[in-house]
Length: 328
Image 1 (cartoon, rainbow, N blue to C red):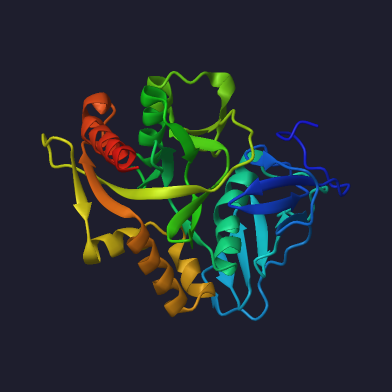
Image 2 (cartoon, rainbow, N blue to C red):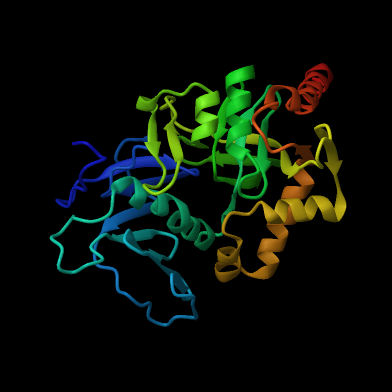
């Protein structure tokens, strides 16, 4: 069956690993790593999703939430019910006159399923998802955060292609503390890039899937289909725009600046406040700051001089690697 053209409504199940979780799904998800059948942490099912959530605490129109549930409505795509950190129900038939299984394009449906719907699952489970792209050097994982358009995915892809550093994750990863280290669990095996970055990096059309049908952003499915393993997060690097004509720079952050950088890196942070106690969230952010280095990297937001502007960042990563290797 071609996962791009049809949802199987006969009860067939697909099994995947992502974010350190096992997933059983009635929707084929080529962005995730297949695994053997198992008793899953999370299930994704096709079914009826109501237009309104019962016992709603707050309704923002497109999204509403209760004590342990979240309803996400995406016009012309689908409705998603996320419950108890365990189940996502997908209702693709927004128009009840449609025959079963007919609806929005599957890549669009999966974009919101693996985005906002999975964010709700993760926050319901008490996890800490970060909106980062990440590459791995000799000493650990370097994660890039920043505002939309700051170039998180582009920089990770550039470092992968130019220096052959492994691309660990793009868009979202989950972190948790373990034995005095910060461990990162990677997200879907895809890289999101705008068409201009794709052209510079020489990706071919057959490698691409349009992220949303109405945008010029594309997904590159990563070829590595190995079981995703947790990796040690070495640093978070906040991407910022340099002043006109200024050279690229990297600076270490500490104290309140480092704390705010970690706080702002949380994916769908409003959901964290819905499903987690304030003291629990504060503890997770503080722990993250204590276990990883935090930097700010300023550059011109352009692809024209990317190679030269990456030199301060490359220098930092190599110096840290050399220092750590020498001390070992």
